Image (cartoon, rainbow, N blue to C red; front, side, top):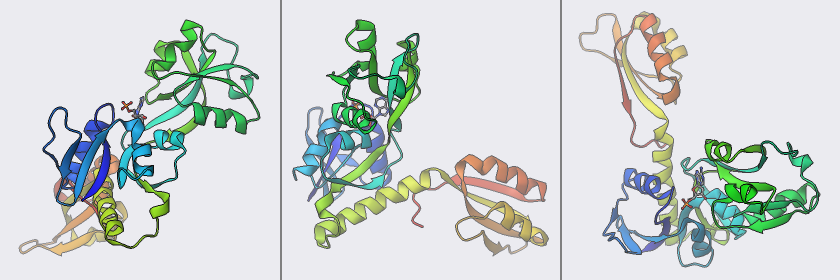
Length: 288
Ligand code: AMP
């Protein structure tokens, strides 16, 4: 049994569980206060705080973990990002009072008080820019620090920017872009034992779900005479699949994997060249 550390609650927990479920690894046997649950036949989920996951994996209490890249970087533990799960997208930003004098990172002077729950990343960010700031460590509600007068600047996570705006802060720089990721010990990279194989299989199962999420499967009946146009509209992974129809007349069936965000454009373009019976479906998993 390999142990996979997963966030037990908080922003990432539900999305991570959904992703594992879609990869065929449903969390089973999780009581209200359970710390572990089975995850398919080969894995055991270990539920802990997102911020503790880098530590659990680095110390060997878990074989792999899923948490925010921001927390992995802040931990400074020797971990390898095995897979970007493309969920929990956010940025760690530097923000200052929107009516204050500081409007860029260059304007942050020596000794400025910077409130953050990411003290290591913050120190490194300013040190790399030749500035020594005074870091004020906080464990939450960082954005209120300037209002309380305990800091002039904050380094905080944001996704939409609305919390910063509500607290009358403006972004003046980006420290890091983050998404949730699957991490393992850096020292395990290149291992070829049974454990490494199981982790590879886990990464590829999750990867196939992640890859499928922003793709759609499109099928249409197309005039055989317009196949060159179809190929232009539907490049697909290897170009569209073309299948004969039993009583198709001048029509053939074309199938292709398309970008979800561009599917409406493809459909419109296909209709324009005389395609009919256009069908778009979700894809569960995609292994290129
Ligand atoms: P938690 O503290 O358990 O809610 O998890 C916080 C993690 O969720 C962070 O470390 C980020 O990786 C991720 N996250 C995604 N969007 C945001 C956001 N807008 N604010 C804070 N954390 C976010």
